[in-house]
Image (cartoon, rainbow, N blue to C red; front, side, top):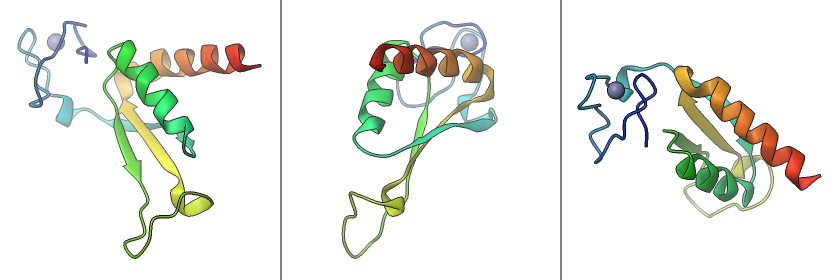
Length: 98
Ligand SMILES: [Zn+2]
């Protein structure tokens, strides 16, 4: 993923930029979009390919996996700094699918 502050590549799972010291975990995470599978995979690969950091929040039911309906909703969170960029990418995705 890329640093939202200086746009250098951040390597490894620590999520701290070695160039500017930006700590991803300290940023404000905002909701990018709520989707249902399998659209979450599309969005994940899109964000990955553009180096945008993201978190996936899945509502899971412990007893049994639910793949349809509201319980399977997937919330995609991104740092506030990259929200506009990420939204623009999703918009392009929408345009392509129409
Ligand atoms: Zn940085």
